[in-house]
Image (cartoon, rainbow, N blue to C red):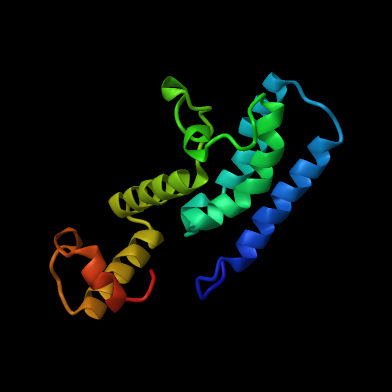
Length: 159
């Protein structure tokens, strides 16, 4: 991650990883089961590794995943135009059950915050400093859960 918080380098790296993976697998023909294993055990694991430190939007993730899904869905026996809400939905509600990396990113960030704020780590101090700076920017020390996001978010820098 860049010191100024830019994620452009990480986006291009993730795009390169996806393009390489698709290129290598497109030279052969995998069965439906093998494609499922390849998706879950290789590319989604690789893309999941940096999740706790990323802050990509849903649109950025969907743009990144578009070529991957266009290649992988037909190999799974699914039309590549299948609604994305069902691609990422659990199998119990007629979804395919692929993890949406935007959701995984948010969960990874929350898990990371809980882990570090409950343990005495250096990252705990960084989270605390960031929260204190946020309160100073807002000019209020009310709990964040009591402040309407849409009203207060424009007063702060992204953090």
